[in-house]
Length: 275
Image (cartoon, rainbow, N blue to C red; front, side, top):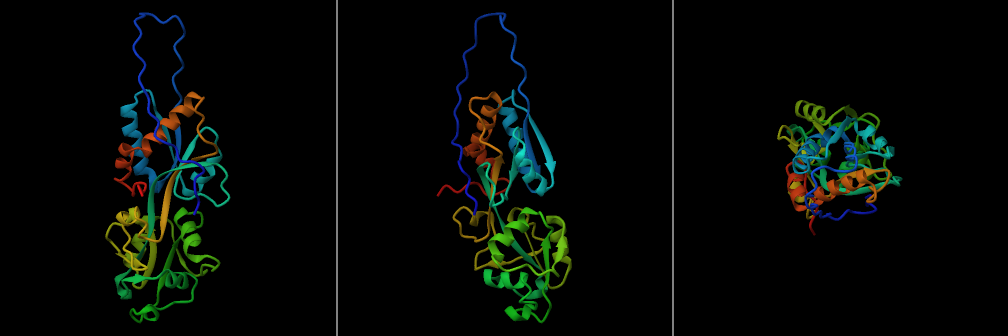
């Protein structure tokens, strides 16, 4: 799994004392430009919570949050004046990233299949087309109707990397264009199998265990669940501490990694492991 080059430590600040001069003799500094963040839909709620809370604490800081598709969020990593919130970084990524939370990939199935859990080996065999019937893994005599996300979806890329290995995904698998579409399709298709981020489970479809582990955010911090996704703030380069805008990016990211920020992260995904 990708490891960020550096995790920012929490950065403490002290307030400058008020001046007794009534009128400044120099021109006031220009307003600070907004901190620009590219955000894909799965992280939109989390980023809204974090930026709102931080702006209330730091009234001189504003944010420009740009909602984009998941692939576009990763492509935005080349913008030297912005950062992206993403849970997927290509293996060849050579920029800078700091972890802020974690999620996982949950397998969901229509209950008609008669199976409550899978192993990683079985999951690989299903998505490669080797296993096609639930009865082959102890379930009902029913075809496995397999769903995956579209090309470019971060959760699909991670499933391929963490599960498929050198095996190729079967070309006949049905496509679900979003997490909501995936839940809808699996809930309404007898024999269906699909996947969504753990944070997107809503109880409408049966969540399967994987290698005996239940998909839950609580299982991620102790690394009890095998399919984990780290959520990053990432960009082309580390925020420059000598640049005013860079200092504010560093302060924001450090705050997100602090206990206060992680408490807000935990409202949406799992916080960073304290192990």
